[in-house]
Length: 221
Image 1 (spheres, rainbow, N blue to C red):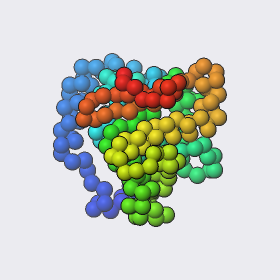
Image 2 (image 1 turned 120 degrees about the vertical axis):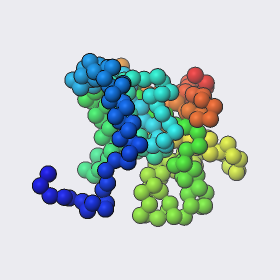
Image 3 (image 1 turned 90 degrees about the vertical axis):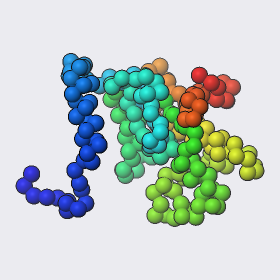
Image 4 (image 1 turned 180 degrees about the vertical axis):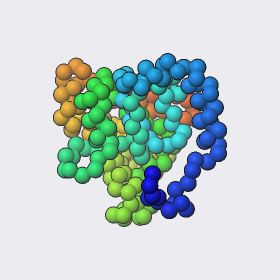
């Protein structure tokens, strides 16, 4: 590279603990499976797309025991899918969905929520009038959580602690509903090429519930 783009004080080299972990992975896992990784380098054919939360405690591949190449994973705050909106602006989540469905042709698309979601709590507080900072137009989190406002409006009245858990479930349902506004998603479903799924993971208990649309409930897996 001919010249520096960023001041040295703004962008640093990797911290030592990451360098050590990489070197350990390269010397063991990669070296022992070199042929597998070279096959992966030829292209991806994931068995499912998973839309999950950015939360560092949600480890999708561990929960499902998945290897590299099995899941096309997109993570965002509160595992939300916005409505279809082809306005020519930047849409990271919608772009990931488009690529997964139209290019990779994944047969399953899973929306995965989780317990103790900070984004959902932020939406709950904002809609309850306890987080005015999220109402500001300059709040990226607040404007993203506007996607979940219809879910808050569906909650039963009161201040029951279970309402936040119910809103976590609504984040999954709102996302599934919004997925059906994407023409290429509904076409893939009608062609029998794609199935949608909603699941909720309890981090502390290690449990997983899936949404049953016929009974409109989440049940244990």
